[in-house]
Length: 272
Image 1 (cartoon, one colour):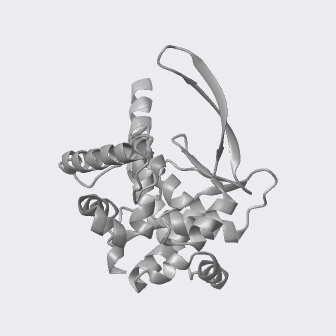
Image 2 (cartoon, helix red, strand yellow):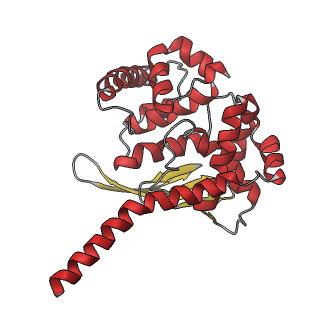
């Protein structure tokens, strides 16, 4: 009898695991079928001018993504900040740009978005190459954690959205990290459509990363922020900002890199 009970429980678990994705998708379909609130449309028009450049089909897709994202993710105000629909929609709109035309998993590891009024301070500890421990503090506008949180400065979120062509957007940056972290620690290699794509991805991004590091070390100007020279993860996040906000320059100055990102994101901002 105990063996039979165990078998039944195992079967029920298997059925639940098989059925859960179906139930989640049914729930999402119902959310996407709802009319997009007029107040949210006003928020997008006022706060996220980038969206006006999108083709009509992508605008519709983005609005549906926003509805699911807002319904599924918890937004938490920090340092006394009260979360409003304006914050939810403004952040969701920019985060969901990165998942247009991609499998709709809506950042599966992400549970919470923590929002501070402005820049926030984090404590950092690290041990150098000779074993000496260092302690310090950093002032940040955003951060992405693999444990399921993104942290954002509302002030910097608004600034990034208000100027959609300067190549700097903290939401795009941190949510690119989330894509990168879907397989663990961020390393500049997000999930690609096919295994065969990784060799070319590594070759192209590795060469571009080395070039940026060389330019940064000689204080030479570049399309990409020197912060992207920190490590491959930051490089991927920085080039994602530029891909969405300065596609013409990126396609002209870094055509191979631009092609890699069009394949990853399944989008071509040059066509908008």
